[in-house]
Structures are given as C-alpha cells and as structure tokens.
Length: 242
Image (cartoon, rainbow, N blue to C red; front, side, top):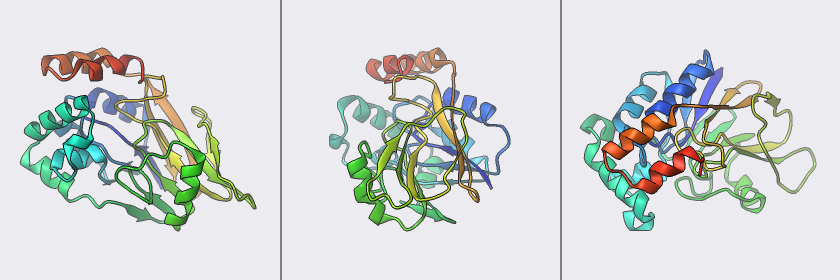
C-alpha cells in the first residue's frame, strides 16, 4: 500500500493543499497528529484529511485545544492560538479529534505523535532519546512527528547504537534491515530552516520511503492569520521555516 504520511498540519490549509497536489496517487493518508493549532483553518484541514481514506492520531496541540492538556504548559503564542482554535472548532471537528486513538499499529509500523514512549509530548531530537524509545515499540518502523524536523533514527544490522540520518529529498530509500524511527517533518510549520511543506511517501509492504518538500503560498496563510489577529511571531516564522 502507498501511504501519504503527513504530520503537524497545524491548520495550514494552503500547505496541505500543496502537499496533496504534489504527492500523486496514494492509497491512504496517515496523519501523525497536530492537525490544528497555530494556523487559521483548523476545521477545513480536518475536513480535507477526513475526505480521504485515512488514519490519524492526536498531537499535543489537538489535546490542548480539547482541554486534555493544561495550556499553561504551552508558550504564550501557542496558548493564544489554541484558545482561538478552541473557539472556532465545530462540534463535528471536536468530536473527530476526541475519538482519535493515542497510538496506532498498522502491519509492521507504529504511529505516534511525539514518541512511542510518551506519544503526545516527548521530543525525539537526539539519537540517545531515540535509543531509549526502541524498547517501546515492537514493529520494524515507527513514525513520529512533533519536532517539525524530518529525520531518521536507525538501529541497523548488528549495531547497538542508534544513528541519526538526514532524509534526502526525493531520493527513495528502502529500509532493508534493522529498526527505524522516521519523522516526515511538518506540513504546516517546518522548523528546519526550510519553509516548504514536508511530507513522506511510504510503501507499507517494502518499507520504501521518500521524503519530499513542496513550496506553497506562504503569504496567503500569513494574510489569513493577520486577518484573524493570530500572534505575529507565528505568522512571521512561516516564511523562514522556524
């Protein structure tokens, strides 16, 4: 099966539309959480994801909007955006988010937003943290989001240590051996210095993965955010990918 893997859409409809136009045919859409928060179109993004055959799990912003996390644990801009999003969600969109399972396992692949150890809010930023998480999933591959940075952590062959690898853009990679944690990066708010939306295509049978980036009209999202008086820092960071 060919899966389109996305994460951290964060209410950015323009970025999501660009990804869908660039991805080509796929059998199923997999979303790794944070459909909402930060961006100006939370209901529309949920509706678009739901229009496809899909799987989704919640992220920390989804839970923050639902009141399952204390918004005092978020920075002031995220808190303000989440309060605004909470006021905008339709009853149907809220019900959808409330029904999402914290983690999923499909075939030989685990889906978690933050990490398999702490699915909602652990950041996998270093090989040492990734290594600790290898004991918390049983599949060959685990897909995560949350950091907004595309990366691969791998424990291959007889190696004991977990190594960190950059994902090369539009260069398919077959995960032939070992166990891996992959992050496709963020659709709606990249944080690796590249403002283009990030996503991944995955063959779930062969574990052939392809990391992709695609430009989208950032200014349209920014204009909409300014109309809604969302925090300026969240608006300006979109154009620099940080």
